Amino acid sequence: MHKFPQPTSQPLRRVRLLSVQAPEDIEYLVKESEVLTGRSGRTFVIASADRLVYRVHWQPLTESGGHAAGPVVERLGHPGEVLSRQHLQLWEFLEHSLVEAQAAGQLFTPPVRTTP
Image (cartoon, rainbow, N blue to C red; front, side, top):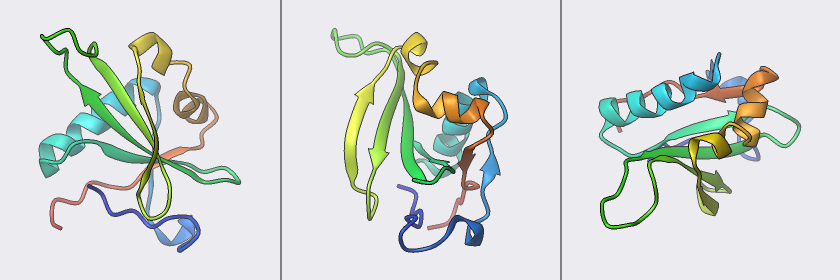
């Protein structure tokens, strides 16, 4: 997965981050990262006082009665450990704090790195 410096170990100003401009860009950015790197998910940062770090995966529809297609949102701790995981429907995702942060201009993602 992405190696992303945690807020406690390195300030955001030292890491070049890309601003997420629209809610629909989140899905595109996740899929772009997955295609270019071959790894599932993409890291996003809410640049607020808490500097929350999330990883978003886009899950396809499962045939065996599992989760429906849509985003899987993981809240990450230090050093990249998964603190919580949510399987969301698209309508639920639009109410998630990631989309709220994007609307406030506080959602960022590191550029895709295709080399380890």
